[in-house]
Amino acid sequence: MRTDLYILSSAAVSPQESFELKDRYENIREYQGTKLTCIEPDYKNILDPKLIRRMSRVIRMGAATALQCMKSANRLEVDGIITGTAYGCLEDTITFLNRMVGNKEEMLTPTAFIQSTHNTVAAQIALLLKCNAYNNTFVQKSFSFEAALTDAVLLSREMENCVILTGAVDELTETSHAIISRFNKYRENVVSSKMCESPAAGTMAGEGAAFFLLSNQNHSGAIARLDGMSMLYDPGKIEDRKYWLNTFLDENDSRREDIGLILVGRNGDSSHDQLYPELESVFSPLANCFTYKNFCGEYPTSTSFAMWMATETIRTGTLPLYNQPFNLQDEKKKILLLSSDIHGHNSAFLLSSC
Image (cartoon, rainbow, N blue to C red; front, side, top):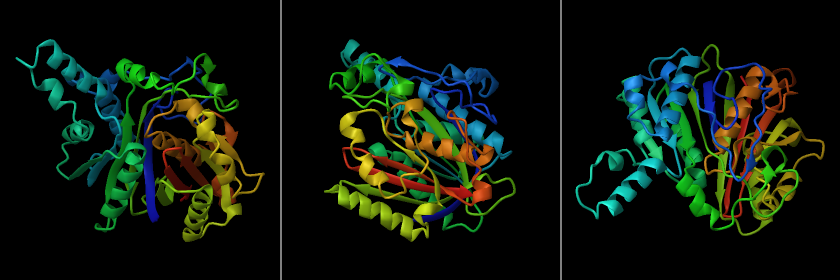
């Protein structure tokens, strides 16, 4: 699908120092064990302290990231707020369930239940911005962020000149990590920076929030352009995935040599990463191919972190965290984001400079 949306600004909270706008991201945080956790900003500088104590962690992360995105573009109003999340407000959900069991389903306060719904983050952002416009949240597993972007594209086609705040957020809690660990999804004693270099059984858990200010008009100061996006669910064979990827590139008038940078969703799990060599074979062996989950970990909406990396690459001329120079504006090249997993979720994004 051709999107032709311009990215006016972006912001991210992640296990790296991504929140503050920088020209270079040199301080790479390494993690050892089974998970990567977010480096959270000082919320008192962004949110009202009276509100902070009533917000759960994921709400603080999402709201602060959205406001930072707005601040970077010097915007006060938007025509829509669209979010994607697979897990929602896990911490509040767990709190409510524990109280329900502990109190034997009697004398329950509704606060934790009210704040446990998946659309709480988008609702809180709307309250902070005093925005009565379109507001929607998508919960589609590993397609949650992609579904939010798709809705942003459809909304932009209904309005002549619009600005839409779109993003994704997912948190990792002790309870959710313990439950998923029972299925042997995570590796022990692995260093995050090395997890994609030596695939084995399991990966490292992650979390994060990323927001983007999108418009169907090329405003002054726009950073990048989202040219196209595509999703494919549950293909039968690897040939189906390759056909899908080639079709996506053809529909967006992109030759293979036009791709200057590829960000792939390898996560270090050998059963998961075996899908990528065939997909990468579509491109030249000399294509610049880098991973991103070694910086953010594995979570359903991690493609939003990859899109933040791509946007920052175009803005700064340097691939964040790798500190590799990629001046796409001079070369007229494009960035491809490619994610594929063993559950059949495949997504591709194509970005270029304005």
